Structure formats: structure tokens, C-alpha cells
Length: 264
Ligand SMILES: [Zn+2]
Image (cartoon, rainbow, N blue to C red):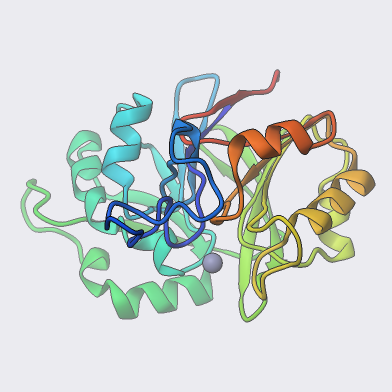
């Protein structure tokens, strides 16, 4: 199994719009380090049978898939409905054309309710065979449920994202936990024995109201002891080289296009 990080930034992307010359605000990061250029957080599970399960549709979805050499998508999971995780929705129509059908998509009932309000047109079946717009086939799941997608068992877990809830995902001994600020005992129990943890880490010091900061993440690592931890959803304080030098063994910053492989 592989986990491919399509995008590793916070909700504004890196660099953010602005900066002294209008060519981007790099925050505390080094503009000359290519790994500090980040698109919005999204990832793909690539199965041993070369099936591709997409997690969220970031605004840069087309750029991300083409940059990472991902030729198609077989199924989709939404973690939650914040704009940085859903705004690439319209690129799904090209994926529909490639698969010749509606995209199987998995999310909780509250996510579907919100997406049906904002993107009602993607839930209507298409007449004819040409996908002029995206079409999803929605499957409702409950946080904590185990689902089988494309021959792979994915364990979902409810997460505390400050003012809302999100889904964390585990398959085998790898987990992808995006957009969370606190972790309850049920989630900690579900994250035992990991070879790989990809985890939300927005800031260097204190927690953001909806995202964990580095001290909180390092406490989780201490407690859960995953073999390898990779940080994602990084904000403008998170400089690649600074993190690389400062993080303890087994913990590293992610970057767009990073391919993570776990046996089994
Ligand atoms: Zn969010």
C-alpha cells in the first residue's frame, strides 16, 4: 500500500496570496525551498492492485493528480466539507469520463447534507454517456465504521476539528488524520501499532482553534509511538528545513508529491 500526499498546506495554500511584490506571502518559510510550495491538503491511497482511493477534492485537484502521475481515481472519501477539502469537486467530471460512470464516494450523513446543499448538481444522474459535469454516487458511513473500498478495509474515526467533526482514516498500519485539534481515547485506541501516521500539524507552537500545533502532535507521537510520522496541513510558520533539523527521529515534514509506502 502507498499513501501519496497530493497537497500538504493549510487552507490558504503556500505561498498565500499577497507578499511585498504580490508574488506570494511565504510567512516564516524559505521561498527558495521547493518543498515549502504547498497545495491544499489531499491524499491518495494506492492499493497493491493499483486502485486509487482519493481523500478529499482540494481546489488544485487537477494539478495534484497530473503532478503525481495518478492516471485515474476509483473511489473518493470526504473527511469534511471545509472549502479547502471540497472545492476541486468540478474536476471529478474528468474522472467520471475516465471511469465511464458515477464516482463512488463515502462520507458521513452531515457531510452529504451539506454537499447536497452546495453542489446539488453532482448528485443528479446524467442523461446520456457524456459527463459534462461531475456525478457522485454517495455512500453514507458512520464515524467509527469499517468500510471496504476497492478490496481495502478502511477504518474511520471521528475527530474533533474545533467547531466541527472530521473523519480520520486508517488502512492496515497506516493512518491519515487531517483537520483535528484534539484526540479522544477512542481515536487513540484506533491508532495503536502504526507503521505510518500522517497527521495535521498547522503551527510551530500553540494549537490553532481547529488544528493541532507541533507540541500537541509530538505529545500524540510520544503516546502512540508510530514507527514513522509525517506532518501535513502545514501553515505559514512551518519551514521545511527548520522542521527537518528540529524534529525528533521518526518525525518529518511532508511535502506535495511525497510517496509513503507501508508493507502489507
Ligand atoms: Zn477543516
